[in-house]
Image (cartoon, rainbow, N blue to C red; front, top):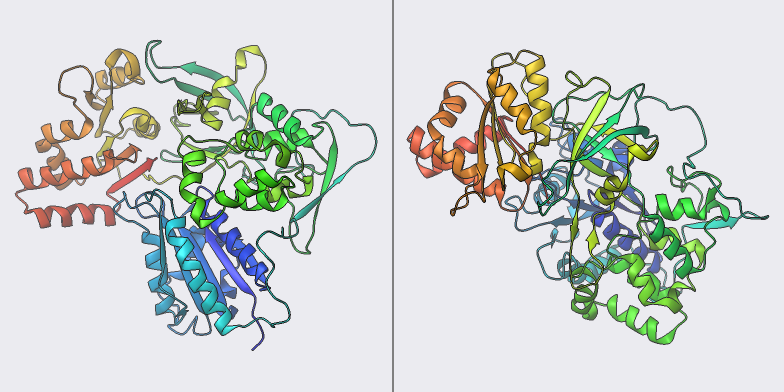
Amino acid sequence: MPSPGLLVLFGSQTGTAQDVSERLGREARRRRLDCRVQALDSYSVVNLINETLVIFVCATTGQGDPPDNMKNFWRFIFRKNLPPTSLCQMDFAVLGLGDSSYAKFNFVAKKLYRRLLQLGGRALLPVCLGDDQHELGPDAAIDPWLPDLWGKVLGLYPVPLDLGTIPAGVPLPSKFTLHFLPGAPRVCSEGQRVAGTEPQGPPSEQQPFLAPMVTNQRVTGPSHFQDVRLMEFDITGSGLSFAAGDVVLIQPENAASHTQRFCQVLGLDPDQNFTLLPREPGVPCPARLPQPCSVRHLVSHYLDIASVPRRSFFELLACLSPHELEREKLLHFSSPQGQEELYSYCNRPRRTILEVLCDFPHTAGAIPADYLLDLIPPIRPRAFSIASSLLAHPSRLQILVAVVQYQTRLKEPRRGLCSSWLASLDPGQGPVQVPLWVRPGGLTFPQTPGTPVIMVGPGTGVAPFRAAVQERVAQGQSGNVLFFGCRLRDQDFYWEAEWMELEGRGCLTLFTAFSREQERKVYVQHRLRDLGPLVWELLDRQGAYFYLAGNAKCMPADVAEALTSVFQEQGGLSAPDAATYLARLQRTLRFQSETWA
């Protein structure tokens, strides 16, 4: 039987599923298998009936949701009118990436696996469930699963013996070649952009709107441990529109000092220009890179040199290293046996790609420029809840940003790429533009007049509820109940004056929890329990919608537990009936949450 083309389709939110998919693509090519790797929503799903060998790699996000780049596929594959023989010619495998601290661990992978079986697909082996909570991360499940997968694939579709596998130490060809342009290096403007046509339609990742930053104001007290900013952008003429619950995506860039250091370590001239050429036909160049492009623009705007490298980075770096000692260490870090050591070197202290390259200077100085895009992932856009309504602030978009900075055992503090870059921008010193676009968020608010809403937003989780309150007040909607929690009233009570003014006008009912203002810490879930009669009255008698936003770690589970207690105490429900009541609220979208790690 001739070897079919292997298709690897991924749904990825943070880049891990894409990284795993590209690893599968490399391992397939080393075994001489033709292989395509694509995001699920960029694949024409109607062609799935013709595929004979597919590996699905999918993450689970939020509360059991599919990633953004597989939502269209998800809707299609669960259509009720698909015949049960739709995929009867397909052999498939499913690899899931999740976090076992969440209730719906790997929900997407499990549900997809069952659905593919319902549609007639044949599973090569049981679903693989990678777990972020394992000390070695998802690889703890993936490493033992892959040999079984390749055994099954090559058993069904053997490769001619005379070809043999490409050894692990030999680098595969790079995806692109960088063709450096002759002549004196030309200093390119900082705003070097993709050449081409006028924007088509609303702003998007391919064509973001360059929004002027209007304000960048610290809203936490000077002695507060965290720097939180209210940022406002002018979106006049952008074509952007959004509603409460939507999110804005911002494309950050690397610090100038990091860009300069990277170019030094790799021996690159930042002002040199190049054009990018794909090695294989049909492979598009990254849409975000202009042609021609400067090395400075590639490094500052595209390569994610401030991210923590994945294992695949060490695998390729080892292949490219001419230095025996460095190569030996890199090979160890990329082997199954070296994963604990790699974790303590890289993941635990959050060491960045740039810092690793500085630790392996002989290897870094020998990296061929052609391999830069294989070695280093692209900078991913960051999503922020929109904190304003166009009805209250026409032509403006506001966000609330907690600037991420923390210490590990490394001397240099760890900094969030996007929040630190945004915080560094000062519109008072001259015009500042930020590339952004919007997309629907996970929260949608009822349009029926008279429907109350209960919003629980501790910390920066209150941001989408400010947009909702502004929108609902402008529409004349009453029944706005907000539970807000923070540490101290005088340090991190965001929009205090605005809430008080709305409360005075009878447009808002506000309940607060200041966790550090008394000996016993009081959180939003305690206030929900205290106000159980009101919560039950609103939900059960008045058909209220319940919303939750904020940190994903413990708070969502604590709030759910508080609600089920309210249902038992105020509604007289048994524990199982209270759980069923909550599940029904979730199913009918009367309980919605937007949480982040």
